[in-house]
Image 1 (cartoon, rainbow, N blue to C red):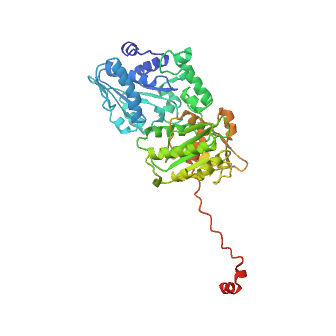
Image 2 (cartoon, rainbow, N blue to C red):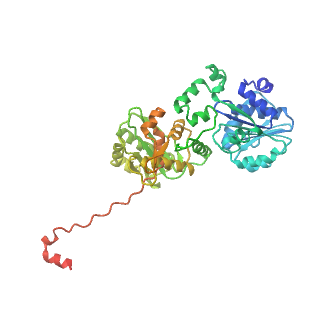
Image 3 (cartoon, rainbow, N blue to C red):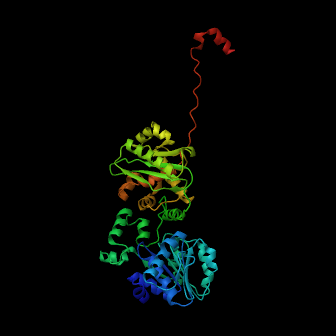
Length: 467
């Protein structure tokens, strides 16, 4: 505690103190928590204390992606090191690390599992952030080091219900020192005022409660730090959402693939019209509009297509942009405007009406809307990505389904979901439309030649023709 308070000038609160004492006294510590509970700061304190106060120590910092290591954990450690004017050689690259006498701290992503296997030392500790989403190959690589007395600290939002992190709180709990920290435990929430900047506040918790609902897996995981309970009748589980977010965060190359657009047109006054652009498996942030008429929505579609064609080097020659529009209610008017617009044709827009109330085109579903939602689930399973959008995430994990009398999957009605959530799932529906691939209809067959009246023109020629 003295190092954190006296050297780093950090206000240590109850949960942080428990973690600091646990990793000092125990070899295997697992912490499940909500957001904004100083996870990164705690990891930085431990790493700096070990490097500067334990001669010959080695500390490894890791997270699922290189970006998380550098932009979050290493950034926090560097900031604390600089502000406290601490000794040692600190490098910008986490792989080069911090070196002081014969101690060192360094970091790399958990994707480099083979690097873990080659690390050794008499006083060695691994600190894994976002440990719930780490591949099991990493833990297998670390296991050999544990035999030599190495320590292991796992810190994470509890997003997955399988794997080493989950086992630490369930079947193998007797082998671990386990700690649970809810966002509601912070001094800011408890006091109802700002005590420690950066920690969760009462206002933030109330905002997430209103946005997601208390029973939502998002609220349970990201606020209360509880493992999700996957309801059997939920279309899209939290695990799929978290994995898709991780893929999005890890994406470094520019998005590629066909440019499509899903448009969910507002039906009622408090609903939103959402335009969801998609490049292959990479969705860009949605454009959300309120209280727009059909002409305005069509204009927004054309503006967005023109903007993104230029921004992503996707000229008209690269292919048409398939704009899939919910054709119920006001959507039909948007489709008509786009189909009769010279500008839309110049931009290479193909307007495709999607009537979700129609019968499904695949067996096993009652209506097309049911089919779209399960297609969205399959898309996420097969590598689809999700941008950081808490509204979208809340909608995705909220939708339930059951079966009709014919055994077909039937997704919860939009109106029922709106009553339960307090808002319409406009963003999720727009993404489902963007992902959906309507059948490319063949041109209608040419009508047969009408020969009526030929005999009246020239009976002789007709008789010759008939021969």
